[in-house]
Image (cartoon, rainbow, N blue to C red):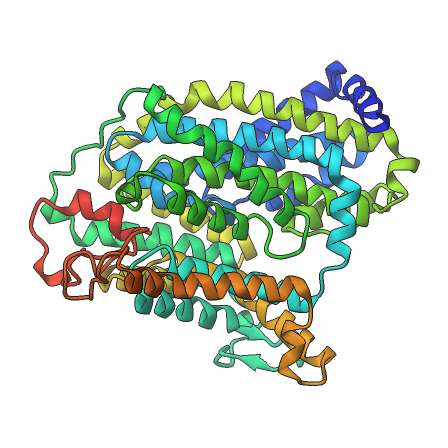
Length: 536
């Protein structure tokens, strides 16, 4: 009851005209900036920090929260329409959202993402109010072995479950882990794969990698096959969800928060891991498994709901522990310190107006986002009517601007082009892009947690499995790896297809390239179909 009465007081703060204005400004800015590839919500909050010096702290943080949630939704817009994630949490949305857009269902994908974002955000924020102390206490007890086990689970899930070809999945993961090694060793300071370049000492930003593999790689792939297509624009389709779509999406909308919220509260990769796991879960539970990789709406609804709920979970650790688990949370922590406020267990007692006003503004922001973006779904989808040469020229321009904005270095443009060529080669040989992305995002953190766990155990491998949580996660990993063989032994699963048999190449989840594993046998006129399979 104390939390409920405090939340009601928070609504009194959040619903004042001035704070409503800041919430609306944050939502609009976040959505607009999230749409631009490479310029995510973290950069937006960082850029606006100096502007908020003269603002009241409550209004400033209400605006920051609106930017955070709006940026996460805006990132899904370009993932769906252009196969170009605006930020890393929107990477998974491209797997099914972009094939839906290419088949004329872009408006439905955007609507499913908007409602999923709303449902996940509302449920996640309710859980933030009710379960913040409990989740925070659980997060404190999780150690390095547990973090490493969670990240290994993400690696295995994204490589072994999304596609039929495990070899290609692990090959793509290896590419991502290698890119993640570039820079200085975080523990010893030794240079790795920098080739003597000072610009590479800080590593390659994940935004540059994601934009390069998705946007640049896609643009180059389309350009290489432009002579086989008519260049006509893609149809928009009807701008509403049909009853059959609602029957397929309401359960993923409700399941997403159960995965996203707990992961958001622990420092294990932000929204990336829960969106991956949500996609895997929906694929396993769906009755339309054959549609996955070709435009299954469940693959949009579940991850978007999980992503939004993860944002609410992130605020649990930030507000109750002062522990930032994402880049946006880290910038918001700096903003707290800018105002002389220290997040932690005493924050709810010392700054109740700020905390509960911020939490109440999340509910307001969710409603504003739904009201703003649901009617705009068919408008955004009309981007697909732009002729493809102009469309992809625009993608290249904004991708380059976003990559340059990350560090302001000319070498970033060269790195972007090199990674784009790698993305083109991966599509050519049917390697999935998604494992490479998750390897770049989680590889450095996984290495750090692995070495930390081994240091604690004096180099003993048993230090990786010395907690009940880590043992449980490894059991889940073993089941994931053994499940195809168990199904084959019991005669309940299909015969595994090899690279030279139909269905054994790209695999489910759009691992890229021709489905028969022989890119040189492409037939003219198949470009549009294969674009959906080859891009993710």
